[in-house]
Length: 138
Image 1 (cartoon, rainbow, N blue to C red):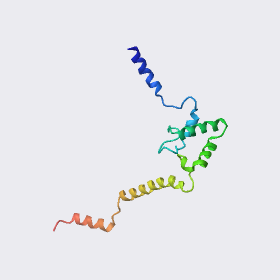
Image 2 (tube, helix red, strand yellow):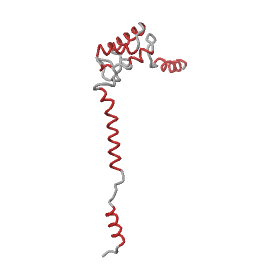
Image 3 (cartoon, rainbow, N blue to C red):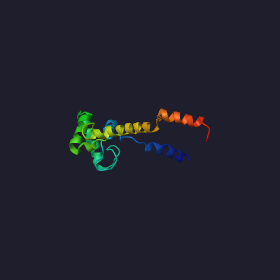
Image 4 (cartoon, one colour):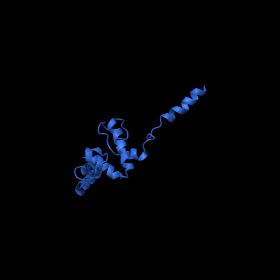
């Protein structure tokens, strides 16, 4: 019975998610902002591919050399292009990726406002409707 309890206590401790002890959390923070060139939809921090492991090792080496986060990202952008960044820069063509969703929401809001706002009825139609209500049916 003691072994079962001990096993139940140790299993969650073994499965804790986090960076391995040999790499600093800063390495994984920077790697989360870079795509894995091999895996689809995973960051370099999440992926277990050989390329992602190598990217994390390079990030750790560059941090030990005293390079800044911007210099590290610039290295990977030079190597793979701006595609490697999870958050594309807000300039050039990628500026449209940042602007268009907001613009679309604004246009949608204006369209819904125009559709649901109360319509103004011309005064002569109102007067004619009031007269027809007051007159007895013929």
